[in-house]
Image 1 (cartoon, rainbow, N blue to C red):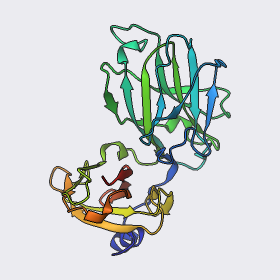
Image 2 (tube, one colour):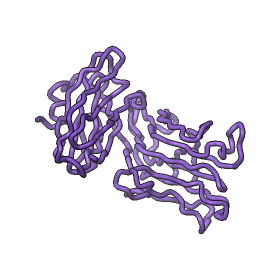
Image 3 (cartoon, rainbow, N blue to C red):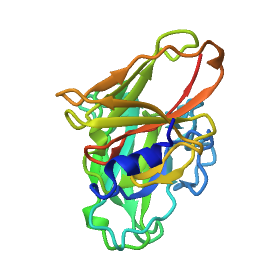
Image 4 (cartoon, one colour):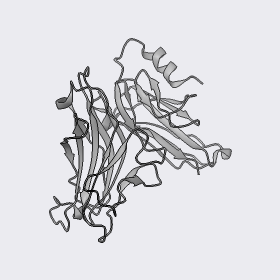
Length: 287
């Protein structure tokens, strides 16, 4: 079994430009705000719980009950440097509940606003780059946002901004800033990860006919530097599978999970060698 990074280098050394990752946070550590991030209570509401961990590896802002009053909280990333960047994109996964409490909902009952924002002056001012326009509770989304307007700045921060009074609920995960415009279309998922059962590992959105390498670690969530950017796996990283995508860019395999694996956490991520793009990372408990 080879280390993922070594295998990728041997297979495609010199033939691909490396992905540059400027920011990566999957909230798998279970603490919100995570290390290096801050939570800013913009209106100093003492009753607001703000951004918290949801217990499932995501950051969550609940609707905060009617007695809380207006909440206005921003989860702020560490600063990263785009002074030498030639391209930059923000990717994240999100989910919305009580969508009809968003102020922009066609049948709104509330005044809620969920924004992704960018600052280049230490948080003094913010530019909105995305606003939640979900129509249904349970809506999920994984947008890719072009940050070209902020290239050239040496100190850039992402702000996840929630506002509302007894409003929407918002979850975010897998916040990444990199130089890959297409990373949002590459999706890695696992189902039926149960000891003694047959699980399914699948990737969609890969290069048609291309090679996809899946790696895993049992040691932790990283991050570890690779030629394709930071991966959310701690060394040692081992190759889980080398797959060939079909003509639609789909690749999968279905192994039997070892019977003694129950209770272990599998940290796993893949790379599409055709584009040099990393998949989303997963941290899955074996049941």
